[in-house]
Length: 103
Image (cartoon, rainbow, N blue to C red; front, side):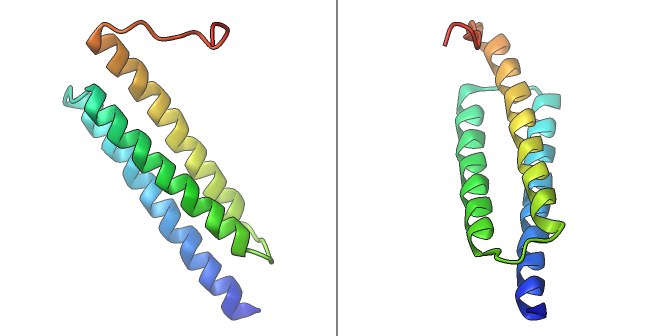
């Protein structure tokens, strides 16, 4: 069981690291004005990969510990960063964002 938990812990740590890199990259792109639809689409694809990875970790984690909630929290931070980035892209491109109520 300890080996299993250690393996999941390494996966959680790596996912957390990648999520941190994702948020940092979006922040950097925003700061340097690299707010384009192409960057947004690339970031959306990257987030989808992180979400799939989290799902795989979750499916294998039959002895959940503190790592899994932390991984969920980091993926949520990625969602928030991408949402803010998409607003910046829409503004830079002159695209009117859809309200949640209109969707």
